[in-house]
Image 1 (cartoon, protein in one colour):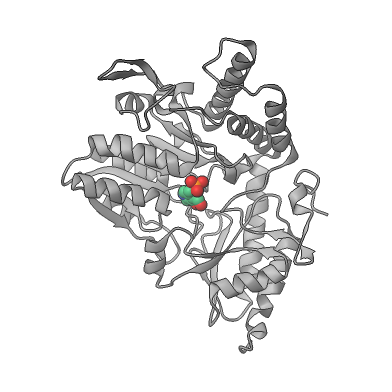
Image 2 (cartoon, rainbow, N blue to C red):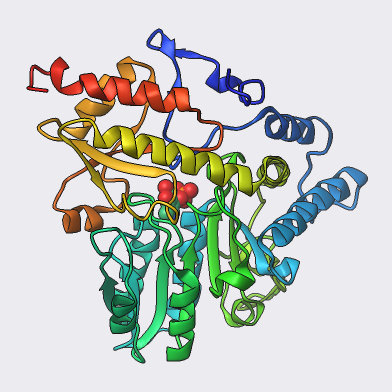
Length: 408
Ligand SMILES: Cc1ncc(COP(=O)(O)O)c(C=O)c1O
């Protein structure tokens, strides 16, 4: 019996007549009842437009929103609430930095260094900046175990580098990149560091002081919060000198016919009516996650990872991408292919057994090119997955080639 079953009603369903085995947590997690209830309660009793009304209900909504900001600040170890900007998701957070910091401070000839494995959300915005400003993208290539070696870091981050964009955990390889080491190297070279923590914050403690990055982005929906709420952390002194990203209501100080002045942080970066229900849900998700505890999350995911990688090694014709040796320092993400079978067919066959995995390029096409594949399947765990889930996945995968009339 799954100990989390009561909290996650969505998992107690059948898909195609079989028990749902949800292994697409890197795409989005499921939400537990305490998060669903917190959002429900907000809309039942506290909903109003924050920061606008002088009436009690609006004051309450504002309080809930700002309490959520403080909860995020504590959760990630930021120094001040104003360093926490609410966005829609990690993509918007990263675009904010690209449009506001990148387009303002990068110059012709500057280099932007980034691993080739970056999610498109931390790659395409930098392509835009590079094109607009005449800057150059310089890629770091992971080794066969999915690691960024010291030599690669030293070779690619130089005094020409002005910005380094790096995921903390790769959404395809599962690699945990050494953001602290990269940040130290980047800072010594005079560059700023943007860490994409979309795949790390839900699974391992991220303290922005220890991480060493100047900016850090993540999405609520991958850590049990509602969709449509995300976070950008930025160092205050950088955020203060950056221009607004989006303009309009809420983010101004005074508007004249020809010009405007802007609100202080964080409102300068929060134009328009905000997703207060999402922020309330994010605060509830943080509470829930901390109740489970990162130690338990890491232990469960690592056990599932080891068990599944061992199981996969026994199935002929399965190729796993990324590090299978460096298992301690790896997220619970397994990208793989079955030789001779298109990943979409693999995913469809697993779906017939109620197993949800992702198939495609995982928004990492430059990495697919580097790995010389068009696409892969991906199974990704969260703490509420069980050994039974891993067994169901392995058993279904064993049948794939047979189903298609290919040799075992
Ligand atoms: C590493 C990484 N970065 C960024 C994103 C983008 O997240 P969102 O779609 O929530 O903006 C994802 C989503 O899968 C991701 O895995």
